Length: 468
Image (tube, rainbow, N blue to C red):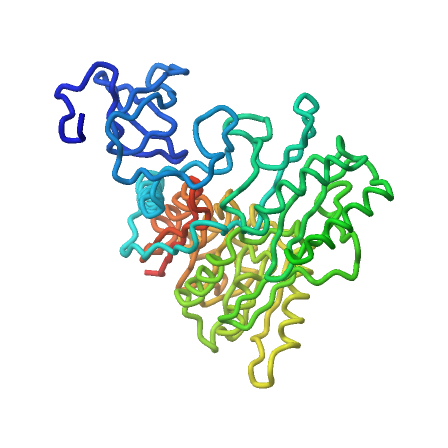
């Protein structure tokens, strides 16, 4: 049967996939209107599915057979991807053409903005895209000794399971990291601490591949020697061991004379040293384009003051200091504020005469409890950069809305003329956009997706708000 010979009406039990949901599941509807979510199915396909969960208004199912394939269906590159038993759960959309993935994420962004925030962007920005493979410079690999199999597993969890997938290669991490997976299995399998090392966190810099070994018990002298020998054997990959006996703050270099872990933003002449447990963007290729677009969209001038909310290590703050007249970086963590100051001072000291960074200050503040008075106390700024975690910036947007609704609270404070909001969660972006547009005096003049995580359902985006 060819695609154009699909019977009408279709055979009983066949389902037509209408769209993809936020979890990359195919969405179909039965004749009675009940929604069916089908793992592995793509829009435009006719499929048979096995229902394994039923509710009054919806069903959950897994794909049994595709009777008519989507033109966007592609062969997954990774042999560990799929719906089979033991499949790796690190990716969700390797079976969908990467261009269609971006289009789906754009639709998710637009749908969230409208349905949750009642906001439509005046202009949709071109999607920010980059390499589809080898992009993931940060990852958290689970480690497990499986006695029954007589082996150690190092990788991501299986699809919808707490078990660690038996992966031997990974195409979303850099090739040199994928090549380390089997050697890492052999290394842990040879150690005295084979049962007490549950995790290896990966953080790549431009020249260093940091591996943070979480260990529940002190490591023996022999095990420390094996880690050093592994780093020497894989020096070409830039391997550098960090040890983490407790929480993230306990992470420290195995040998203190190692090369510094850092990434660069060449467009701005900025170098950003970081610890492997610090938050940095997973995809450095996209991060460079993201920072460049955010700075260009903000369009700060040398006579203007900018506030960078949720500034972290200064990923946006320092590039902004190459364009603005003054920058204030605000972050919830005192430790990150200290690191931001260090990064600023180091970059300032390394710049050529006549190319100095603008004055930048950094402050610690709980941004999830922002009040109108606190916002006024931070002073007037011409432009804002907002880059919150998944929880969004509700308190900040609410404070702006309150000040707009009640001018008596302002005490001479005026709102920024432009806000560039970088989001890793389209639903919280939509919520905050609704506040800014409907209660804060702003218009959403532009928005677009950022494909930070190809082959996953994660939607990163950017929106621009201009004061009306």
